Length: 330
Image (cartoon, rainbow, N blue to C red; front, side, top):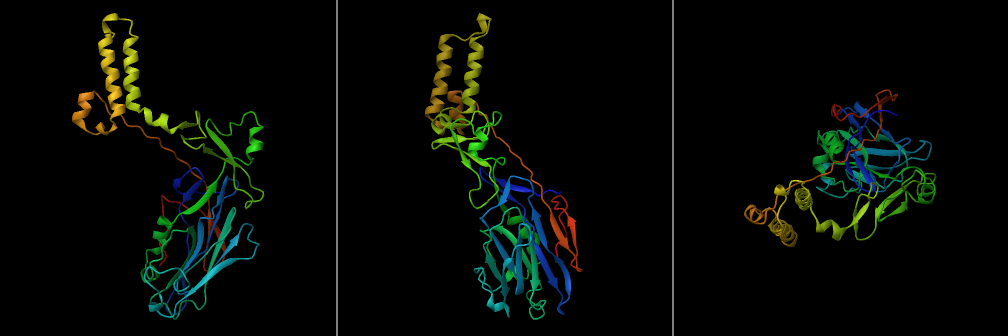
């Protein structure tokens, strides 16, 4: 398995990656001008296709199928037709006129096959291409504008992600806890078995913070009480640390007096009592508050691939590369 896909979002239970869209375009005489079937295999990773995805077909003379997992199971899909453009509602539902959708349960891999009933001969003036893709359910069909939009393929690749569920390892909570080197979940969090009964043969686990706690349950020290988190900010901790450092100075002349210590502590107390003063420059000067900012960045990169079919229906291996996006079909 080779190639990379771009991760656009990651949460405690899910990951969103850029899409892979199948398409077929036709001339007014019904000749195929360009076509591509799509396939993505997750392989030996801790990812599964989420139920938050839906299979969508766009066009006026098209039907698409999804082959699941080992590609030997019966395909599932939907079809869409429209004899004239007026049948297609603007911003309408995907009910079969210009757009159709169907829920599909997937595991580790899929392959999309897109075909046409009559090679778009009677609809080429307003729909010369058909599209099919797996993507997040919040996709909104824009009606007529989508059917004749030369940028639909690129736009869908960029704005309609594929949702993946993810877990840690291939052991459930009970099994993971038996291993000495397995930390499972850190403090103030609980272990939850991963994919459940729908993913037979695939296990793994997740970690969730206990109620009333927040943080990253996968990293030490784990989750913290939300009230404790709210009590101190980084700038307060910084100022307190600097004060302690001054108090421990071996040179007595450089140590602060008790009066100075009392004033510094009072400033910190005022900042905690009146958080609305943050961002107000004049008030910050009065209470001696210094502004500090902190952020954490996380990055993850799964691997994937898709297959491209040429006009002779022979498959060849290719890779998804976001640094060099493929040419839009037309």
